[in-house]
Image (cartoon, rainbow, N blue to C red; front, top):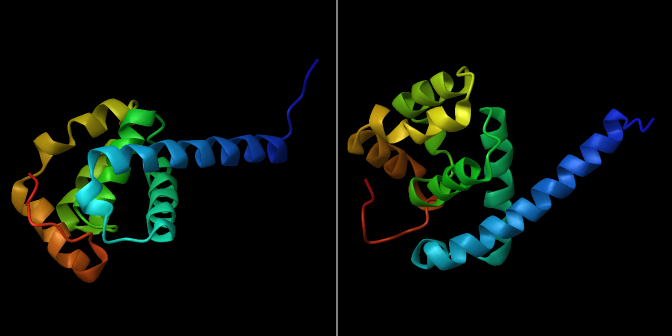
Length: 134
């Protein structure tokens, strides 16, 4: 019988997240080139890695929803999840039996004002862009 120890699983999880970060970085380059253009490659990779860790803390495990979470760190600011209404919505997401499905409803739970507040509080750490996203 094959037994995988906890430390071995940790290595597998780390490798999975490195591959996911590479995939999401490529996606950002295609989908959001204007949002990431002002940032260095190192800044982009660091933000993607940190966002993946935070997304997993909220119970997100689906590549699509983690990707959406990561994209929000560029479009709404790296700490968008600390805006009070967004934080409350994410807390309800993380307690849901299926947080990936619940995350898909996030926009229904929040207003444009919530997202704009998150962007404004990001200050110089948000990727500058001339458009406002809903």
